[in-house]
Image (cartoon, rainbow, N blue to C red):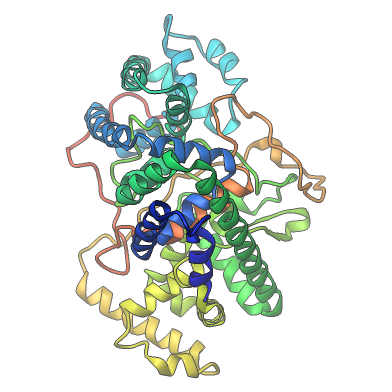
Length: 489
């Protein structure tokens, strides 16, 4: 029923008497059957980002050219890093998220530690140690990166020089949001149709996506509130959820001190920094991962005053994939598994949208021989079913993969700035803003995060071959060149 409503919101013609527009609507309706999730993802962004998307869609050939350029520039950058260890590569990739910082450190001459520390005053604490290490130990590499970025940006401007200012400016905005550019390329057929409609009737497209945005935002808010209330009503599930969250953080390279100490400000609106479009994201990821989020975004909560959890969202698709692709988690946290299942059963209209419902739905489909309709009916015995099924799958996986590295592909660890910690913890302020916010970030406010979360939960990402997702090392042999400094990421 909800899909039908979305269809009516987005696709009802303004004037049924206009046959040409009817044809366009019929065509978009056909596309909608295959690409509704992409339409939804676009609608979840703010009006400013949606307008950039529509302006860019008027010139879809630019998207194709940028994708082609990016494949080549990423290959060049990946080859540039092959002589470095994987740990060192991860540091360098993280530093590329701050192109202006690299330029300031690299251009002119090699900087002293004091000069670099002065530059770093303009940038978030989380990148300080890495920038200092790389600036002092791998200056020549940073200079090469800065020069390549300058060249690629110049090539980018050449691509835009023959386009109207509004189109060029839209692409200048979107190049800072590579996740959105990926969406437009991956759904190119839809991009072509929407771009054509926007050329002919921009008011129609803007008004309909405004309406759809309201519907999806309300749905997202309700589903999040339902999730938070369900945790309050089930203390054991909440306990296991928090235990699983801490295990997830540890698996992603965080120490207990990183995530267990209370935070003295609201971090649900913490700004993130995307990987540089030209250099891409770390080569060992089997899926597009452009925006490294801190652990609390994947958790959907953080620890505030007195170690009390503050829930602000739903667990991310990355968290849910981590949970369901490892049968040990079903056995260790069976009440949580059952809680996910109940949420899924109570939200039948969200099986292809929010992260929980979609993950449960995918898990059921991939285990349909064992997880049948009896699981739906057996509400009392389902916890035990999860424990037993998890134990069985653990044994099966161990026997089938005795000599395989079962470590999953972890996300980059983002440290909590020291200024966010305090022995005198106050209740978080909803409107507080983190310090150290440089001019080159796009602020990931809650609306932007919700749009990304919605989008992530609808992606058809590359799935692991087993319940585990091995972390693939870069393809070429590598040695540890130069000092690596302390482990940060």
